[in-house]
Length: 114
Image 1 (cartoon, rainbow, N blue to C red):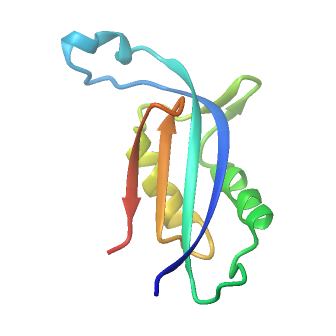
Image 2: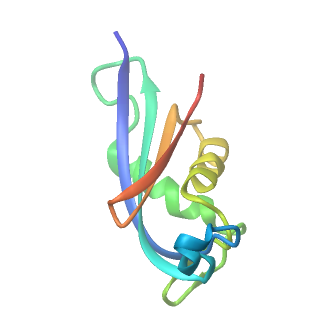
């Protein structure tokens, strides 16, 4: 049996895609999203191996010191959803099994351990 504890967090933020193709060139400019973050931890017990609220509280502090936070949200620079997910996969403790980062709940990326 595979058991996962899953926590979600939403944070406002800005990023850009400097190498965006011409057909979506507007993405080259800094733009805002509400980033929806979903973190999955592999656990060994059915009685919440990681507590939900405590797990949520780990996500936003992980960004501090790496991404600036202005009054309107985090500055993710040219980092994609996949890059932000990879950052969290390698920064959170205990290490998660997978991280997803979605832009406005529409499009996103997922990174998971093999």
